[in-house]
Each structure stands twice: as C-alpha cells, then as structure tokens.
Image (cartoon, rainbow over all chains, first blue to last red; front, side, top):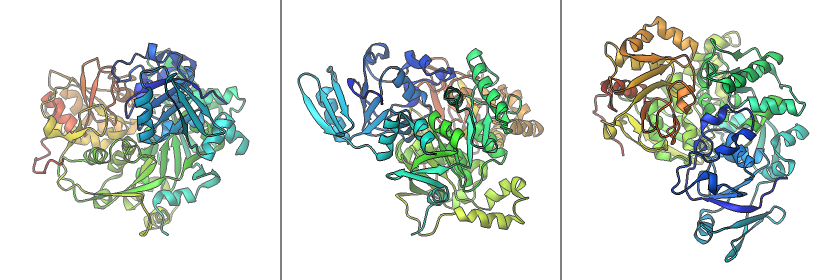
Length: 174
Length: 434
C-alpha cells in the first residue's frame, strides 16, 4: 500500500482541470517516470510555482470538481511520480477520482465546509496530514493548530487501495 | 419501478457487485487510441499478461498525432500497431485509413443500442447517441478492459434533459449543448448519465446527436445518452440488415433499451430551444457561454473546423455553404480537418474541399491534433481560436492561447469576417437567452 501521509500542497481553487495538471503536449511520453518534471505546469493560480511549491509534498488539499476534463491517467501519475498519493477535495470529476483509486491512490471527498475550515486554519503554513485507513481518520497539524477529521471511503475503493490498484484486484477476481 | 436507459443497460451487463453501489459490467467493445493505450500495453507486457479478452471486440485507431510528428509519437503509434498485429485485432485503423476515434468507430457500425463501451478518452460519451452506455476511462480501466472485458462503475444516477421545440435556422446541436452546459455548470452532471429526450432530439440526425452527447462530459456527466429510434435504425441499417428481417424488427429489438415511462430520474431539466440563439464560450471553462451577439467583434487569429464534436460531413456542408465563393479574412488563418477518410472523400466528391481551399483554408488529414494542442494547428501565446471543438481550458490549443467554442456555422462566418460573428443563416429573430 502507498504512503498517504506527509506535507500538504494547498491548491485553493475550484475546477482545476487535467490540462492544468499535465498539459496534453506531454502525453507523447510512453513512461510515467518521464512526466515528473511537468506537474501542474499550466495551473492557473496566483503566486503558484510548481517547481518550488510541489517539492517534498505528499498530500494535495483542494476545492470542488478537481481533475475535470480529460480521462488522462497521466494526471494521477504525475502526482504519483512526485510522491503525492492522496488528494483531498470537496468534489472530484468522476474519471479522475476513479483513476486515483485504480492506481491504488486516494481521492478523499470531504464536505465543502470542512475543506473551507482546513483552508482557513492551515493554508500558507507548513502543514502535515496523516491518514489512518483503519480508523478512517485524518490528523492535520502545523505546530500551532491541529484537528482530527473522520473520513469515509467506499468498500470497493478501499479494496483497490489495499490491492495496490484495479489491475491487481481484477486479475485476482475476474 | 421503471428504469432509465442506463439502468437497463447496466442490469443487462452485471458480472459482479464488489461492494456498495459499485457494479462490474461486461463490455461489448473496448476502443483504443495511441495516446492512452500504449502504457496499458507496456504494463500488460511487464506483468506477463500480454493478452486481449476478445480481439473482435477491441477496435483501435491512431488519431491524436497522425502522421507522427516526432520519435515519441512514432513510438506510440508503433506500440499500438505492433500490439494490434500480434493479437489479430482486425479493426485497427492506421495512417491512410484512420480518423478521429469518436467519428470513425460509429461510422464503421461498431456502436449499437444497449452496448457497453469504454475508451481511454473522455469524449467516449459521444457514442451514447446510439442508445449505448459509453464512458471515458483512464488507462488502468482500459488495461483491465483489454485483459478481462470488464469495467467497474458506480451505479449512475440518470438526469433527464428534455429538449422541446424546433431550432431556428443557423442554430445547431452545438448551440444546444453549449447552452445546456452553461445551465448545468461544469460539474452539474457529475456521477450522472444525461438522458437526452424530447422533440428536438427526436428530429436530430445521428450526427447531431453525437455532437450533443459528445460534450456531456463537459458538464461532468459519466455519459450522455439518446433513446434509440428509427433514426438510429436507419443509420445502422447497412450494418445490421443481415441480423433483422426488417427495420421495424430492429427497432423493436432496440426498444429493449428505451426508457420506461415511469423511470425515476435524479434530476430533470426541461428546456425549449425554439428561441435559442447561437452560443459561444468566452473563458477557460466550457460553462462560460454567451450568445454570439454578445461576443461579436472579438478578434481571432485562427479558425478551426473539425474534431469529434463537429468534424462530420453535415458540419462541413454547413460551413462550406457559408464560405462558398468567399475568402477568409487576411487577418487570420483557417484550418479544416474532416474527421474521417470517408468524410474527407465524400466532401471531395461534393466539392466541399474545393470550397474550403478556394477560400484559403488549410485542409488537413483527419486527426485530433489541434483540438488539444498536440499537432496541426497549435496557437502561439496570446492568440485566440474560433473552434468547433469541445474544450476551452487554459492552454488547451497551445500555452497562452484562448479557445472560443462554437458551431461550424459561427466558425465559418467568423473566418470570413476576421472576428467572432453570427452566421447569415441566423436571422437574429430569437431572444438572447441569459
């Protein structure tokens, strides 16, 4: 199972799309590893610098309809190649969310008010999130504040995470 | 309790229920192209599982970058080509026979009412025009589809979009779907299948229905879907006439996938398109839509007519009708890409290609290239394109470029004018809708 704990990258915007996460011009690569330098290259967000801001992060916290647009699994992959295995949002586009779990990664949906509180308390600080899949509990802290936030993941989604993705799961079951 | 189209198709294909509201469906077809399939192929090879569940149910095409533009895209084509050969995938469309996936696969008769179809491409929802459940998926879903012939979905909710009325001249399915996306928002249909119905849909051709369903994903929908009817049967007849004694018999069989009168929908949107005017996008999201009249005069540097949304013969005919005998504005360049060789060939025979060339259009081979900024018409920073495609994201057709989505009629008129403008086919009598 992958790691779902570590420093947080805050992306404070709705509707961040797959072209912003990984532009189509890089879809000519035939390996996931080659995508690594291009993470969030076209993200339209004030003051955001992917080269600096994505370094040493493990979790993304963002707003609604994250990953809308293309079906490209290159979007989860470019996060995976940068050691980011979990995205927490108030909503996801269907294909992106499915792609995350299919890769054994986590796409956690929290209520919009909860996401709003996380942004208010932690955005702009050096924040760490720990995910406990047994207790279904997130622990978030930045040295000053801390919170415990329960979360829900569907039975099948969790089975994909534990299996290391849909190919492993399907190969055993079908 | 009655069922929606999607519920009927799901119930006819369930092979497993692995938990919660998730079902694993048997697939009738897996479509593949050279951008999202090679990594799935390479992973299957690495796992020692280089197999396909049924070569006759797998259809593949090289369409995104074709002919290859560099070594990397040549390699992607080669991986797909070699794979199709070694597994005996007969329906593989290589350079010279290839076209935009969501145009060529229906044209070849591969989509039927009641089918379940996946492809590693978000605009796979196009095929819902035939009363099929067709969904865009990622490479991992595609990989499992290729290997096992199954795919997992949450049982989708169905949203009914009922479209009444008759379109005015100069107003098209593209204007309808842009207006619907504006109404729903970019995530208004997330985890839902949009079921289109109503008088306006019943009178649409299959081409128009494909335009309608093509952009369902831009409202977040898992798929768009139209009820099968005699229009569907007529389109498919040359492929199915051996299977049914008459068109009526075929229709009767397809009615198994018509929605029940007492089907339950999670949401319902009722619209009347009688007063709808031509629409265009203005921002970086496909729900940022206004009447063309409000953006009239917006400068553009390129016009692009093509894609899985609007690169079909009907689209080219409409555009050529506006362009005939005129030349494009010297302030811009214009590109037309017939979506398949069959469309290209028919357009040649009808004299449409000559009309475009005489007007100063660059006519390209069938390809997805420019739509997503991969090849054949990329914008420079600061440039704007009047485009018949489906997505206007920041950087979509080239970093720093702006895309205005519109119908082929509006794009053709804008090419002549040198700026965004309504086509002369539209009389302007309709009310501009909010």
